[in-house]
Image (cartoon, rainbow over all chains, first blue to last red):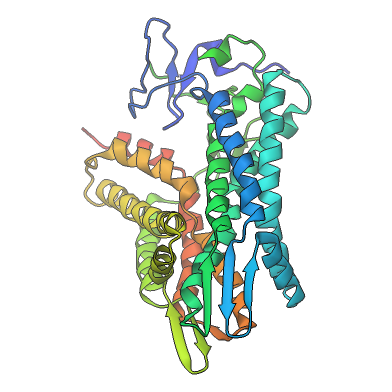
Length: 209
Length: 203
């Protein structure tokens, strides 16, 4: 089965409002007549921006997991928890279901996003024909799960405000939480910058603009 | 410059001719499997009603505390904005800003702007002022609106504290649950329908 793409047919779909416009070579910087957004054949500077966000996210992922995201201070004990430590505490207290949710949201999702985007970027750079449909599905999965890694950030914010009984018990956010928040935002920006149409592109001429 | 009988897959660039769909039908891209468009799902009027309801529930979820915690007779209530303020005060400003944007500001702006657009199109039958800019804002905010994640976060927080002190859910948490459901429906709304609705209006 052969497919006709918009680039083949000289069509230019607007990313913002979905309007399908004609690609007129004479116009140097075309704009959507309906929503005035600039029209691009592929997302502007997609690969470079995606790599930049991805590398920044991967680097920050190290302090996000090594540094504590939370200090708990009570009369009896003084505890610092990393993300993994927090999951262990949940598990030991018997709420294995929540431990599983936090484990998936804070550990699996960020790793999945970083690894999967690397695979997508490298394979589309090589114009690989390997498992294109699967890779397209992987990208849609990334877009869907992206925001769920924010879970731990919200937990910390709530604990900080709730557990505030001066000197008896207090919770403070740690530097790991800031790094982790940045990782979530950066991985979301990285997957938004990636253009899934690059998975299918065969001719190098399309991806240049 | 327009070619409206065509629809282009946003994920792989294949061009299709638009066909009419029945209710609850979805057109999928044959090559990559992404969703192209859906059959008529919801009347715009229903959408407006949902948006207005969301606004009411949003106010309730923010006015009432989410959780209360009791420790040696001292009680602490925590509202959504209170949590954000506390995060700000303890020196993790970036987290406070992140939470304020994704759980408070973006969802609220989304609800207000959608309500304004739908109200002006359906009730006043007028092209809304600033329509194009508002549509861009709605599209850009959508992935950053995270009420549902915050809801699960609140549940995790309750369980974490349960070992330390007595905690119970307050009305705000239930309202947040309802709001999550409503916003999921609102966020599934195809914004392209608003472009069509605007074009149907006479000049």
